[in-house]
Length: 553
Image 1 (cartoon, rainbow, N blue to C red):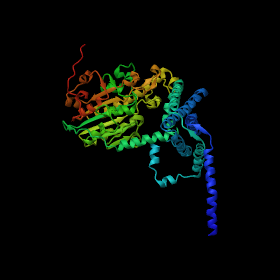
Image 2 (cartoon, rainbow, N blue to C red):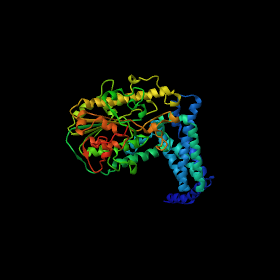
Image 3 (cartoon, one colour):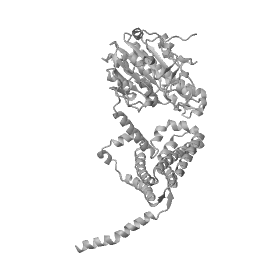
Image 4 (cartoon, helix red, strand yellow):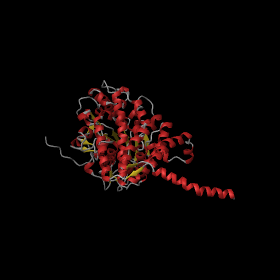
């Protein structure tokens, strides 16, 4: 008992001294402004946690020493600028938040760095989903002493330093000015090193999964947003009725990065559309996309009105709407960026690999696997098939088609498109268009095998593509600034004789319309299937029975 009392006495006597010494140590550190903390933390974040990022880039760069250094410097600058802007925004809310946020980021970065280095993972949206859905037993199996060392060195070390220093609040005006100067400096650097953009764009998904803390913060937000969108119950559109019970098949082919300028159907001098021309496909005049990137363009194609007026997923989209009304909707994709869909048949190209045999079983050709049998076996009166192509997505156009479609030569094999000659770049792109023509032509051939069924095919690209015009490449330029080649897209229709008789149409009627857009798709598919509802707009249905006067000669 006496020993126990002595222990308590010791603690009463010495613990206050130890606690006081600890407080003195923490309070005795240097005092720095919040502005300096932002700058130091941004630099240290880029320097300490991004060895995997720079290593990934170094292993894949194939240019000269100077070009490689420019790319690596650009990546370092990009990480630093992003972190600076993020921390500055936090400091504008309250300088007191800077220290705890930096400490939390250090610990999370240490964990992320361990898993990136140990398992070679990329912290993309899918990986974040895996992390959030990991059970305790699975997580505990990942424990290793090295993980503790990473936490101690890369998390605990920076946290001790941050705990030691004292932060003086910075005036919000200085923080805002620092953010502006940093943003301008970063923009100037990116503009001056524009030659590195194409390489960074090609590897953007991998690079994005290695940038800390943005890989897990942004992808966590993306994953959660996709979960909310999936779980959000879309407001149903008005119920529809059918004008007839004739079996009808509509095939909607959504292209990728195809521009009308390179389609022979629109007057291009090269024979890039031999299949569509032979099948009697009809090019619809003056078609424009509503966006220059896939995600937004898909929403336009599948919406009954302007989707920018509401949150994605808040209103029923075309496939979900038709599926709810008993239409057999089959979605096959070799792409990404699709909005949440509530349909019963969704297949990726990788799902079809085992069922496919022969030389056509590659690239977008996989989407046609057993399509004839799938349509024939459907008991539904109304069928919609959506084929979402990988198409001509750059910058590696030469990888988008089988070797047998390398008709136009020589071709650009590099993702550094500025290093390719104009001729080789156009050749590679045109070969990808030629293969898309083959795939769409074969989809029409599937419908031609069922002559007694009313059927039609619509092909429309999500957006166009820049191939060096005005110094621009690829797509994604804001619509207000985007050149016509990123907005003018091919929009092609084909109708079976049975479909033309049912709708009292011929190709002249389709050619009479002077302008088209992606907003035509929803209502044209409804019209083709004989559906009517309160949201149906006959003026947007290219198959409408309304006669449009011919323009005067």
